Length: 273
Image (cartoon, rainbow, N blue to C red):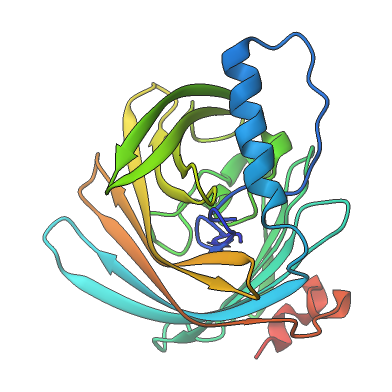
């Protein structure tokens, strides 16, 4: 997930699932912004700049789904991400087990200013299903992550406002509000806690279209790679309205895998291994 499930700040990738849940590459020229809006945008751009140049990465993931009674089901996946110079990232997630989801593959092409392209390969049906932009707020594989969470969160996808500084777990954070530009987003706004030293996202509150608190994503256990790129090894998404939660645990981050465009094509989904 750079993005969800993968990003320095969660560029899930959240799941990027990466990791790499959320700031894509950009340099914006802003006009007619209030001081709070300009500061919020500046923080988002700085967070993005600090994760530029990773080229590609891969990781293994364990997904733990919990219902409101605490009952768990576990899935294991692999993820790989390819950075794009002039657009959002490309990401591929492959499910290895349990048996009922083994071989399922998800491909995402994130775009800066247009709707993302996303496909899901379902081995039971032996076909590739395109995820329409109108369904982006739907749950990803029954988890508390939405399809729109599982892509790199490019700066252009939001407008911003600085809210305040706040201490969280002993760290000083900027708290910024970001408002999705896409009217089909399942969220009205998101509040993001970004630490003032390394510009990593540690917490994100998601508000539904009625402006009620829907979910909270908490990121922890950050490690630095290549002396530059930060990745959170634990992502916990709690749905406050249903009592359900999904936890993502990442292991074995690798960079400079030599991935190419041909590794991220719709036609290769069924052959993903």
